[in-house]
Length: 121
Image (cartoon, rainbow, N blue to C red):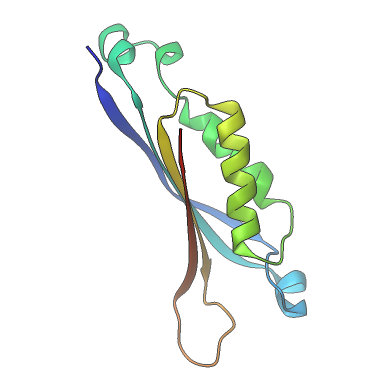
């Protein structure tokens, strides 16, 4: 019996240098990345074995690696993360990645700017 479930890794924080403005490339900013993925958790629900599920430490490592590469656009950062997860985690049925930038440089008050990308098999 399939037991489709969800694995989430929320609030991964990174100081990174993404942005179009020179100050963003020099000073950096706080970014938060959230991952949410659906997959068949039947085997893991029975076995209690890490081999039978998605190791979220792998997701974290992928995100950390991609966050260390400066980009001008959050869309590019999220797209690279998405592509790397697709390659590393074929068991995922669908998943999303959200990249958020703290206090984006806009005229006025904004707590976050965010991009969310989705992948479905």
